[in-house]
Length: 494
Ligand SMILES: Cc1cc2nc3c(=O)[nH]c(=O)nc-3n(C[C@H](O)[C@H](O)[C@H](O)COP(=O)(O)OP(=O)(O)OC[C@H]3O[C@@H](n4cnc5c(N)ncnc54)[C@H](O)[C@@H]3O)c2cc1C
Ligand SMILES: *[C@@H]1O[C@H](CO)[C@@H](O)[C@H](O)[C@H]1NC(C)=O
Image (cartoon, helix red, strand yellow):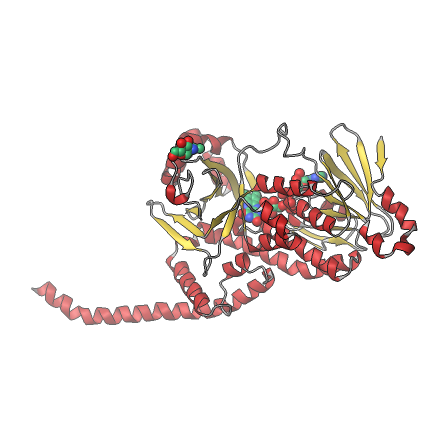
């Protein structure tokens, strides 16, 4: 039997007093944030700070409770960069400082070649870093931030799975139907809904029945498996911790069709991820010895750190993740009734390290629009869809493209030459010439779509310079050879 819990008894009561209160009515509007993941938590904090009465729902149990068994015990880390950090700071500077206290700065990529050679490729032109952060720790810190609000401002409801949304007239309450652990359906009426329920979003699914949403979902042929490098047995002075690799780099073992990466954790361990085509993984999994051979042959140095037996065990038994891109438009239901943010609106492959960063930026963009429109949700949501779409499609495309760069291009001479010229120009023409990676990761003030447009323009120039460099090197080489030829001939004769 459906039990009706009217969350907004309070605001419905106030609806009659609407005319008298005017400005204040907006302050007591209620919102359901669906999903207490990274983006949902930040959205909830930002909305609560604007006076909305927020209830956050998640179908999981509270991940901070020790008894929660679906909690992932190993750390899985993410790279947070400028867009993520500045969006956290936009919501609340002190909150940002608290939730980011455990980050580990990474100033570049460390390429591990098959022959064991290591090669550092610095990300920023001026020492900028991206940062490794434990996803679960960050999520828990954000939940703690929600607990700081009074319970009449923010409520957290775990074990609530969104099943259905009944969209109503914008002036009425939108009703959300949840299933709970005890099998009882709960119905909540709220003024509006912010869906942050991840790539398989139920909010989005429900919206598709209400608005004519353009929607696409595409899997890329890549499987990922999380592996683990334990802390070293000895403390390393230089790294200030028990790290067996330098913690200030994102480690990559590029092997063209597949690759391994690793990011440092505070305790000295590294979370490592294998990425490769499904066919390859499936054929390897046919036998233990195949996996063993494959890992040892392609990643001997990484195996020395993981322990081959351990790595094989993880490779065989850990979940195999699929990677997909989700694009849709619009992101909202007219009348300011509902909007989706984060992976719910745009799922991207992880190769630019931007999924969460972009989701946090969604929150900032939406809050700025709400502020600019004095809380007029209908206008703000409409403007959000209109202005945000080009940036979201841009980063989804860039993320796919970066797989090739990480797994293959980083080892090619032509790529490295171009990159050299690119960063040389970037240093020389500070603020006039900006490498794409710099714009995406370190320049939150440049929207993704603009970054791509600028980069395309620069690329044309870059190709010309690269061709000139290659040509002049060959001409010089030819001249040098002509000069040396008589000498060589003489030497040969004698
Ligand atoms: C291998 C990998 C590496 C990545 N690396 C990076 C990186 O380095 N940098 C980066 O910025 N991003 C990275 N990402 C992307 C990043 O993880 C996501 O973009 C981010 O987690 C999205 O957050 P979210 O809150 O939108 O969704 P989620 O984190 O998926 O959270 C959704 C929440 O909604 C809840 N939920 C779902 N359905 C319902 C329902 N029906 N009812 C109630 N609750 C529901 C879920 O329980 C969950 O808590 C990576 C992703 C992968 C897979
Ligand atoms: C870190 O190194 C120290 C000695 O250098 C050692 O005593 C300690 O056990 C190590 N920690 C881990 C987690 O291995």
